[in-house]
Length: 92
Image (cartoon, rainbow, N blue to C red):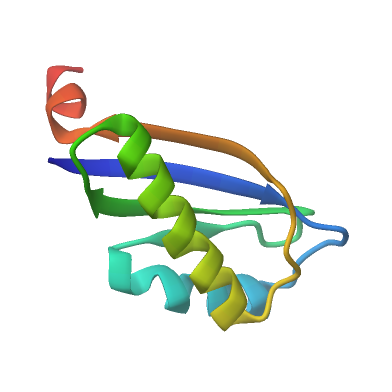
């Protein structure tokens, strides 16, 4: 099943446009989009295949961490992680 997973992390500083663009490039492989320009929180919305909500969040968190490293962003604690399946989204 396909899941849309939103993840947000706390940074120790305000992120620039260029940094968030680097994150956007890094999450593009997961059909992802990035957020956080001009804030101390950065995040991404990723699409993953998983059997359950928990598995989707775990997989997306790994993909997000890899993208953060590729983008060269400061690592920070994840402050939000939520997932919605295609079926749930269609029912809304």
